[in-house]
Amino acid sequence: MNFIDDVMSGRVTLPMVPRVVEHVLRSIRSDDVSLHKIAEELEQDPVLSSRVLRLANSSYFAGRRSLSSISDAVGMIGFRSLETLVVASGAVAAFSEVPAVNLRQFWMMATITAASGRQIAARLGVDREAAYTAGLLQGVGHLILCQCKPAAALAAFPGYRSYWGRPLADLERQAFGVAHPAISALWVDRLAMPPATVEAIAHSLEDADADAPRLGRVVQLACSVAAAVSAGASVAEAVATIDAVLLEMLALEDYVVGADFADDFAELKVLPSPL
Image (cartoon, rainbow, N blue to C red):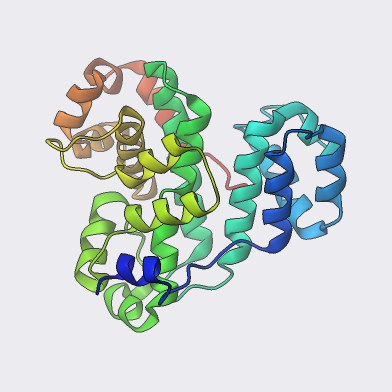
């Protein structure tokens, strides 16, 4: 039996977000949802509310504005972005310690992937919020695999080296028999995230000849960009590492060799982690 079979059969239980997060998500998705009610619920949990507020004040959501209260944050960002913030905050809480993973580094990589996905989506006219969410949660499956199989994780990933994207997936297949996108998609689906987000994550590292949704290709490119940022690469070095076939598929060849990509890349290199 493989890991996914074990999950589907109930032999392995996926780590889940705290109950307060599940409760808030249900409220956000209810027919009679209100900003005031959601703010009140978040304020009942100081840890969750502080994480949501920190995320809401990140460069993606607040820009130069400074939000001082949960009510301000909820009112400014709206329900859809709030759902992303709450899920991300729940993920941070669900994985407080994971074998062979430097969590601070991991969430920084996830944040850069999300921000890069948003940048790329903006160039393509793709849903920017969906790209941000998919990029942010694409790697969660790695945390699940390492948490469920600690011995294999410690053997495969010594020294907390920051693998990401396809190099990470290749090592996971050797260590666990499965790569993180499939597990991330299972986890996100259990949280009832939009099907487009689930599909994008599931197909975020497909081969060029595979049938993958456009949003999945956006996340795939964002993973490559995030890996280059993490490695301290220059713009030219980053472009050299990106799959030319992927760029052709997205019609972004001119973008990556122009000033717009250089500006976007520079923004990612100084991006603070809100998690």
